[in-house]
Image (cartoon, rainbow over all chains, first blue to last red; front, top):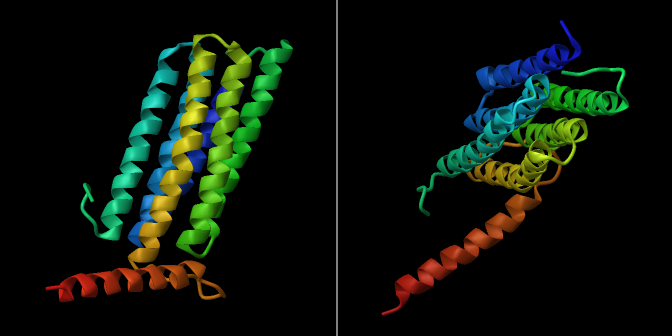
Length: 87
Length: 131
């Protein structure tokens, strides 16, 4: 287990804590928060993968993941607020 | 891969380890804090800074080439989108009636929001009463 795999294990632990909050979160807003944080954590995971493999591809994946997580969080927030998506 | 004999790789690894520490602290706060709003503020700020540091580790490791500029673009994008998403979720939680933690003493947003909702209702009544 080299040093970067240690970083990945730590990020997986953080993602597990996020999933734990999504599992037991009492309201839907808690689950929206944890899903939002999971998206940002995965961008960091893509950064670690970039250093591990030295490939350009993972940074592009992280960029696209940040965009999709942002749009998903906004859609969840609109849904929680009880408005339509084009409002 | 990381080669600890090179100072650039060592600096990148220190940055990434700091980022991982911030991520872990944010996620522990997400699990431990009592309230949606507390969880948002712990989680969003710590995890955003942790992701910054992880991406800056990529910039330090590879220099400002193709990967470094993409990592900087990622930093800019996360800096723009993460507070916006957190603000939208907090507003949605407040408007959908999620209660504050029992020890909370002040809810400024409810005071302002009630005033503004009242103004909107007055507008609606006013428009409804127009011939």
